[in-house]
Each structure stands twice: as structure tokens, then as C-alpha cells.
Amino acid sequence: MFDEVKGFGVTLKRLMMPKLVIQYPEEKRPMADRYRGLPSLRADPETGEALCVACGLCARICPTSCLEMHVVPSEEGDRELGEFILRSGRCLFCGLCAQVCPVDAITMSREYELSVMERDGLIYSKTELAAIGAQIPSWWDTGTNPDTDSRRPEGGRYDRFRDHATGYRYE
Image (cartoon, rainbow, N blue to C red; front, side, top):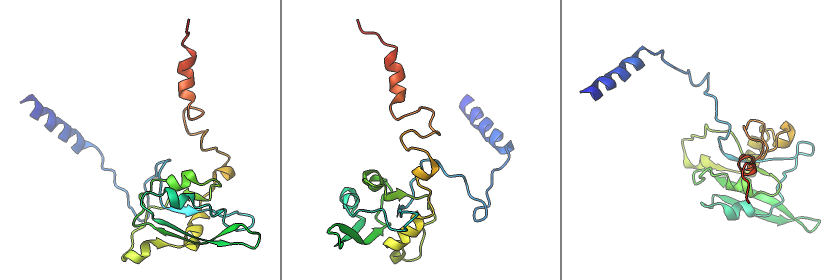
């Protein structure tokens, strides 16, 4: 019987609390710092050229094979990115493509309003992904290193273990 009374107490307490309502299209909820949205391509802000070196690591590591790259040879004998296609309907938004990129050409954007009426709208080309990526400030522009971000309570990725290790003495 005491459990039922506790349940009613919780219900009455929630009933008296003010309601939190957000008028969605005009007002949006704050997004989490580590939110991973749609993968997008970055371009050099000075020249406007894509940072991608067409290594193909992102397409190889993708678990769902949602990335497709067409590489063309350049005049200098290197490779250039001819076409880059993302099928976001298949994407897991895992961020592996952004982690494996050696030149930070792919980043996870903060786009979350991705609903479309037809499935063909979920296929993004190189120019569309570059337009989304142009809106995102890169970490070298903001002055924060991803491994030593100032928003984290600890300095680096493994600094929390270093504090515990210094207190032990082995004899």
C-alpha cells in the first residue's frame, strides 16, 4: 500500500510543476556538444577547394557503405575527388568517416532536420555536402583542439588516469 501512495505523491508533485513547452519552429532546443549529425565535406576557406585528397579511407571504413567516391587522375599525377555521394538513408551517423580522415575533410555537421517526402532526397552530392560543411567552423578556426577541448573538465583524453597513477608507489 505504501508503494501506491508513493506513486501518487510523484504524480501530484509533477502535476504542480510548471510545464516546459518549446514552440518548435521558432524556438529550438539546445543541442548537445557531442551531437553527430549529417557528415559533410570541408573546403579551404581561402581557395574554396575541397580538402579531400581522395584517399578513400572514409568509404572503406563505413559499416553500411553509404559513401561512394569516384576518383579521377589530376594533371600533376595525383588523385582528385571527382564525385562524392552520401546516401544518408543508410548512414548510421557513427562518425567513423570523420575520425579516419587524415586531412579533416569530413566532419559531422549539426544538421538534424533531414526529413524528406521521397527517398531520392536522402542522397547528397559533393556540392550539397560542401555547402553544409561551409557553415561549420573548423576546430583550427575556433582555436580548440578536439583532444584538449576547453569544455572538458580534464585537459586531455587520458589525463584523468595520470592523476590516479601518480599517487601510487611501487616498492
